[in-house]
Length: 88
Image (tube, rainbow, N blue to C red; front, side, top):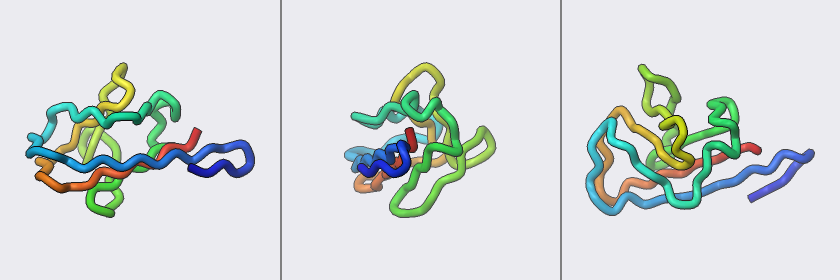
């Protein structure tokens, strides 16, 4: 975690422990997208190091009203790594 100019960058990493179907909520422990106001310009999501795009026709969407829940448009596999960066 890093703070520059009053903006805090919070990084979290999660390892997928079982297969996870597309479009089913994945709750990332310790992540609160509300801290970044669910704003895609303040949230980066990576899968296995690749930056994902946010939006209903893109790689993922955030589940409104659930702090750390994300819906991926593709299946996740065991040992996939999800990394989030939030600016707050």
